[in-house]
Picture 1 (cartoon, helix red, strand yellow):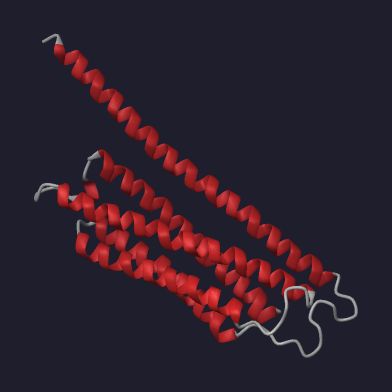
Picture 2 (picture 1 turned 30 degrees about the vertical axis):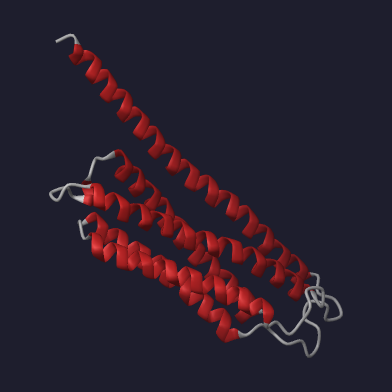
Length: 217
Protein backbone atom coordinates (compact mmCIF):
# COMPACT_ATOMS: atom_id res chain seq x y z
CA UNK A 1 0.00 0.00 0.00
CA UNK A 2 2.92 2.34 0.62
CA UNK A 3 3.70 2.24 -3.09
CA UNK A 4 0.31 3.67 -4.07
CA UNK A 5 1.06 7.30 -3.10
CA UNK A 6 4.37 7.12 -4.95
CA UNK A 7 2.65 5.80 -8.06
CA UNK A 8 0.06 8.57 -7.87
CA UNK A 9 2.79 11.17 -7.44
CA UNK A 10 4.68 9.76 -10.41
CA UNK A 11 1.53 9.87 -12.56
CA UNK A 12 0.86 13.44 -11.46
CA UNK A 13 4.43 14.44 -12.31
CA UNK A 14 4.18 12.79 -15.72
CA UNK A 15 0.88 14.52 -16.46
CA UNK A 16 2.36 17.86 -15.40
CA UNK A 17 5.34 17.35 -17.73
CA UNK A 18 3.09 16.48 -20.66
CA UNK A 19 0.85 19.49 -20.05
CA UNK A 20 3.93 21.70 -19.79
CA UNK A 21 5.21 20.44 -23.13
CA UNK A 22 1.79 20.99 -24.72
CA UNK A 23 1.79 24.51 -23.30
CA UNK A 24 5.28 25.10 -24.65
CA UNK A 25 4.17 24.05 -28.13
CA UNK A 26 1.15 26.37 -27.87
CA UNK A 27 3.30 29.30 -26.74
CA UNK A 28 6.13 28.56 -29.17
CA UNK A 29 3.75 28.57 -32.12
CA UNK A 30 2.37 31.98 -31.17
CA UNK A 31 5.85 33.38 -30.60
CA UNK A 32 6.94 32.06 -34.02
CA UNK A 33 3.93 33.67 -35.68
CA UNK A 34 4.68 36.92 -33.90
CA UNK A 35 8.28 36.90 -35.14
CA UNK A 36 7.16 36.09 -38.68
CA UNK A 37 4.56 38.87 -38.46
CA UNK A 38 7.28 41.38 -37.54
CA UNK A 39 9.23 40.42 -40.67
CA UNK A 40 6.21 40.67 -42.94
CA UNK A 41 5.18 43.99 -41.41
CA UNK A 42 8.66 45.30 -42.23
CA UNK A 43 8.22 44.18 -45.86
CA UNK A 44 4.76 45.78 -46.07
CA UNK A 45 6.11 48.99 -44.53
CA UNK A 46 8.93 49.12 -47.09
CA UNK A 47 6.39 48.59 -49.87
CA UNK A 48 4.02 51.37 -48.83
CA UNK A 49 6.77 53.75 -47.74
CA UNK A 50 8.74 53.55 -50.97
CA UNK A 51 5.55 53.62 -53.02
CA UNK A 52 4.38 56.77 -51.24
CA UNK A 53 7.75 58.47 -51.87
CA UNK A 54 7.63 57.71 -55.58
CA UNK A 55 9.27 60.59 -57.41
CA UNK A 56 10.12 60.75 -61.08
CA UNK A 57 8.85 57.21 -61.64
CA UNK A 58 11.36 55.59 -59.30
CA UNK A 59 8.84 53.10 -57.89
CA UNK A 60 8.23 51.40 -61.24
CA UNK A 61 10.53 52.53 -64.03
CA UNK A 62 9.15 52.81 -67.56
CA UNK A 63 9.02 49.62 -69.66
CA UNK A 64 9.92 47.46 -66.64
CA UNK A 65 8.85 43.82 -66.98
CA UNK A 66 6.58 42.81 -64.10
CA UNK A 67 6.77 39.41 -62.34
CA UNK A 68 4.76 36.63 -64.05
CA UNK A 69 1.17 36.98 -62.83
CA UNK A 70 0.29 33.35 -63.56
CA UNK A 71 3.30 32.06 -61.64
CA UNK A 72 2.53 34.23 -58.62
CA UNK A 73 -1.09 33.08 -58.67
CA UNK A 74 -0.03 29.42 -58.80
CA UNK A 75 2.16 29.95 -55.72
CA UNK A 76 -0.75 31.40 -53.76
CA UNK A 77 -3.07 28.57 -54.86
CA UNK A 78 -0.56 25.98 -53.66
CA UNK A 79 -0.14 27.72 -50.29
CA UNK A 80 -3.89 27.92 -49.70
CA UNK A 81 -4.36 24.33 -50.88
CA UNK A 82 -1.65 23.16 -48.48
CA UNK A 83 -3.42 24.73 -45.50
CA UNK A 84 -6.71 23.21 -46.64
CA UNK A 85 -5.26 19.73 -47.08
CA UNK A 86 -3.58 19.66 -43.66
CA UNK A 87 -6.64 21.13 -41.94
CA UNK A 88 -8.90 18.54 -43.57
CA UNK A 89 -6.46 15.77 -42.64
CA UNK A 90 -6.45 16.91 -39.02
CA UNK A 91 -10.25 16.71 -38.92
CA UNK A 92 -10.05 13.13 -40.27
CA UNK A 93 -7.44 12.28 -37.65
CA UNK A 94 -9.70 13.49 -34.84
CA UNK A 95 -12.31 11.05 -36.10
CA UNK A 96 -9.84 8.19 -36.08
CA UNK A 97 -9.41 8.02 -39.86
CA UNK A 98 -5.64 7.72 -39.88
CA UNK A 99 -5.29 6.74 -43.54
CA UNK A 100 -7.29 9.75 -44.76
CA UNK A 101 -5.18 11.97 -42.52
CA UNK A 102 -1.94 10.68 -44.00
CA UNK A 103 -3.13 11.09 -47.60
CA UNK A 104 -4.31 14.65 -46.97
CA UNK A 105 -1.17 15.53 -45.01
CA UNK A 106 1.16 14.25 -47.74
CA UNK A 107 -0.82 16.21 -50.30
CA UNK A 108 -0.26 19.27 -48.12
CA UNK A 109 3.48 18.58 -47.96
CA UNK A 110 3.65 18.20 -51.75
CA UNK A 111 1.67 21.43 -52.23
CA UNK A 112 4.09 23.28 -49.94
CA UNK A 113 7.11 21.94 -51.78
CA UNK A 114 5.58 22.90 -55.13
CA UNK A 115 4.93 26.43 -53.83
CA UNK A 116 8.55 26.67 -52.65
CA UNK A 117 9.86 25.39 -55.97
CA UNK A 118 7.70 27.81 -57.94
CA UNK A 119 8.90 30.71 -55.81
CA UNK A 120 12.54 29.76 -56.45
CA UNK A 121 11.82 29.31 -60.16
CA UNK A 122 10.17 32.72 -60.29
CA UNK A 123 13.35 34.32 -58.95
CA UNK A 124 15.21 32.89 -61.93
CA UNK A 125 12.68 34.28 -64.41
CA UNK A 126 12.50 37.90 -63.29
CA UNK A 127 13.03 40.44 -66.02
CA UNK A 128 14.62 43.02 -63.74
CA UNK A 129 17.48 43.50 -61.30
CA UNK A 130 16.92 43.91 -57.53
CA UNK A 131 17.99 47.55 -57.51
CA UNK A 132 16.27 48.60 -60.71
CA UNK A 133 13.44 50.36 -58.87
CA UNK A 134 11.76 50.60 -55.49
CA UNK A 135 9.27 47.91 -56.48
CA UNK A 136 11.95 45.45 -57.58
CA UNK A 137 14.00 45.83 -54.40
CA UNK A 138 11.00 45.13 -52.17
CA UNK A 139 9.76 42.28 -54.37
CA UNK A 140 13.10 40.44 -54.41
CA UNK A 141 13.38 40.79 -50.64
CA UNK A 142 9.85 39.45 -50.23
CA UNK A 143 10.47 36.50 -52.57
CA UNK A 144 13.68 35.45 -50.80
CA UNK A 145 11.99 35.55 -47.39
CA UNK A 146 8.99 33.72 -48.79
CA UNK A 147 11.17 30.80 -49.91
CA UNK A 148 12.30 30.23 -46.32
CA UNK A 149 8.84 30.51 -44.81
CA UNK A 150 7.22 28.32 -47.46
CA UNK A 151 9.88 25.66 -46.94
CA UNK A 152 9.20 25.78 -43.20
CA UNK A 153 5.50 25.31 -43.93
CA UNK A 154 6.31 22.23 -46.02
CA UNK A 155 8.73 20.59 -43.56
CA UNK A 156 6.58 21.08 -40.45
CA UNK A 157 3.65 18.87 -41.56
CA UNK A 158 6.14 16.41 -43.05
CA UNK A 159 7.67 15.78 -39.64
CA UNK A 160 4.21 15.45 -38.08
CA UNK A 161 2.90 12.94 -40.60
CA UNK A 162 6.14 10.94 -40.40
CA UNK A 163 5.80 10.77 -36.61
CA UNK A 164 2.15 9.78 -36.89
CA UNK A 165 3.08 6.88 -39.17
CA UNK A 166 5.61 5.66 -36.62
CA UNK A 167 3.21 6.07 -33.70
CA UNK A 168 0.41 4.32 -35.54
CA UNK A 169 2.56 1.19 -35.71
CA UNK A 170 3.05 1.29 -31.92
CA UNK A 171 -0.63 1.66 -31.00
CA UNK A 172 -2.96 -1.16 -30.08
CA UNK A 173 -5.69 -2.02 -32.61
CA UNK A 174 -8.47 -0.70 -30.37
CA UNK A 175 -6.78 2.63 -29.62
CA UNK A 176 -8.36 5.76 -31.12
CA UNK A 177 -5.62 7.97 -32.56
CA UNK A 178 -7.62 11.16 -32.31
CA UNK A 179 -8.34 10.65 -28.59
CA UNK A 180 -5.31 8.65 -27.47
CA UNK A 181 -3.80 9.77 -24.16
CA UNK A 182 -0.33 8.51 -25.04
CA UNK A 183 2.15 11.33 -24.34
CA UNK A 184 3.68 11.26 -27.84
CA UNK A 185 0.25 11.31 -29.49
CA UNK A 186 -0.88 14.24 -27.37
CA UNK A 187 2.23 16.21 -28.26
CA UNK A 188 1.76 15.34 -31.93
CA UNK A 189 -1.78 16.73 -31.81
CA UNK A 190 -0.52 19.91 -30.13
CA UNK A 191 2.15 20.34 -32.78
CA UNK A 192 -0.42 19.71 -35.52
CA UNK A 193 -2.68 22.39 -34.10
CA UNK A 194 0.16 24.91 -34.20
CA UNK A 195 1.11 23.82 -37.71
CA UNK A 196 -2.41 24.44 -39.00
CA UNK A 197 -2.42 27.94 -37.52
CA UNK A 198 0.91 28.68 -39.17
CA UNK A 199 -0.23 27.37 -42.56
CA UNK A 200 -3.44 29.42 -42.57
CA UNK A 201 -1.44 32.43 -41.45
CA UNK A 202 0.96 31.96 -44.37
CA UNK A 203 -2.03 31.55 -46.71
CA UNK A 204 -3.38 34.93 -45.57
CA UNK A 205 0.06 36.52 -45.95
CA UNK A 206 0.45 35.06 -49.44
CA UNK A 207 -2.92 36.43 -50.53
CA UNK A 208 -2.08 39.85 -49.11
CA UNK A 209 1.28 40.17 -50.88
CA UNK A 210 -0.11 38.62 -54.06
CA UNK A 211 -2.56 41.53 -54.18
CA UNK A 212 0.20 44.07 -53.52
CA UNK A 213 2.78 42.79 -55.98
CA UNK A 214 0.68 41.24 -58.74
CA UNK A 215 -2.55 43.26 -58.72
CA UNK A 216 -1.92 46.65 -57.14
CA UNK A 217 1.73 47.03 -58.14
